[in-house]
Length: 71
Image 1 (tube, rainbow, N blue to C red):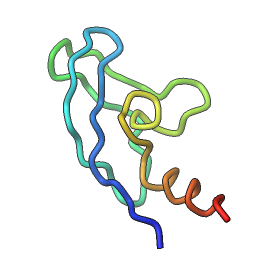
Image 2 (spheres, rainbow, N blue to C red):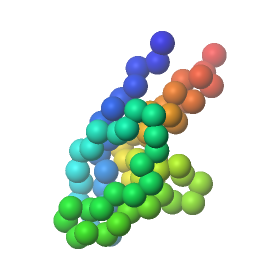
Image 3 (tube, helix red, strand yellow):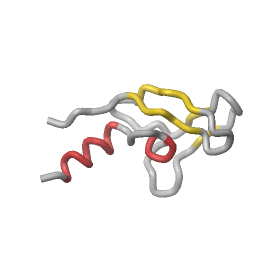
């Protein structure tokens, strides 16, 4: 059984500020507003959510897919 990491450190690509956020269990978070510079973050092309683009770990659905790909 896969161990899911629920917290991710988001780093703003504009100002470099970081925050630790708890990720939703069953959905991708498409928007996040930086608390420091108020930039609204959106996923980069090809990513499903802001955690996959700017986080220290990918979102739980992607983590599950990565674990299911392993033999």
